[in-house]
Amino acid sequence: MASVTLKNIRKVYPNNEKKKKSKKGEPVKKTNLKVTKEGVLAVDDFNLEIADKEFIVLVGPSGCGKSTLLRMVAGLEEISGGDLFINDVHMNNVAPKDRDIAMVFQSYALYPHMTVYDNMAFPLKLQKMDKAQIDKLVREAAETLDITQYLERKPKALSGGQRQRVAIGRAIVRNPKVLLMDEPLSNLDAKLRNQMRAEIIKLRKRIDTTFIYVTHDQTEAMTLGDRIVIMKDGVVQQVGTPQELFDHPINLFVAGFIGMPRMNVFDAELIKDGGKYAVKMGKVVVDLDEEKQARLAAKRVEPQSITLGVRPEHLTLESTGGPMLHGTVDVYEMMGSEIHYHVTVEGKDVIIIVPTIGMKDVVPMGSDIPFTFGGNVVHIFEKEKGTNLEF
Image (tube, rainbow, N blue to C red; front, side):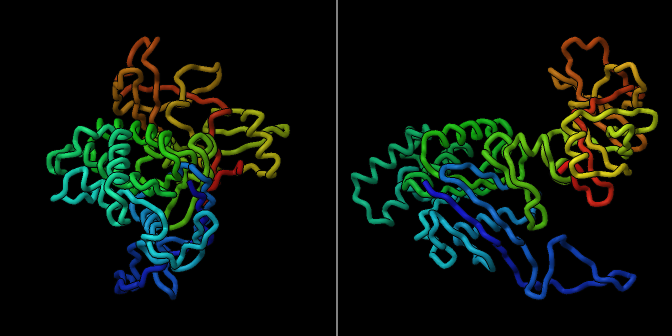
């Protein structure tokens, strides 16, 4: 029930780290975060417009600043620079309790001496709400999350998934404008994580609130988010829908972070013949499709050495009649509906995913395996900076 606007948000921590020097006398840098005279920039120039009821996922490796940003929205961390607005109201100096925001933590943070009912009722009691209204709201939230049967139990008598539902119930019981979730599924096993992802998707349809969700798991990001914000070293790399990030990664970092298994990369050449672009690897030349031709032409990209990206599922063992690339099978993994070949190609590990339906024989380990790809599935990255040359 709220829009959230973040303008030029910065978070600076004091640089208390003692400067150590290497044997060569040069400073040793322990982090990739930018260090200024003010201190260490944990979040740098973060800008985002979040629409009412939108589900935004912040994703990135550990230490990229995503949880710090969430805590600044919650008011648990001071904002060093920039402006935070909720429903166009400036929130920088508003106390956490007055922001109408609820937060679900990774560790559940339930009161062990209280029953599930009392845990969920606690924030309503702080608002001095009457008992009848508290009872109504708690039971409605419990029914939404299917935990009514656990209301009289204490947290120690619940499983991890049940505790997480209670933590979510305590957050939604007062119908907050914004619901913040900081890696809420990371303590659960794989089966429970899948189940809870589905529960969060259902919950999103039942309650009218804006979600900001933090995770380092790209599967959670892809399945939950309307839009995903990918961060690295305190800086936003790309913002887009899950499909946009998968199809059009803006740089090598995003390309490697989104997609499982991760994208394969090759050393290649971008060439131009008769006004048309193609990519060349050894004797293999693949013409690019019309969409890629148009984007490269619009940017007047010159022929050059490139890093070529191709996702494992886009490599094929079927010959197009022309020359094929070759590698040696190191390992293969049977995954039921598909087989993953780990192949060494010019000293690099390459993964090829092949559907098992219609497959004749498995290529044995140690064997040569020929493969190729189409000109519609490649990603063309600048060699040094790793930026996508199409965008």
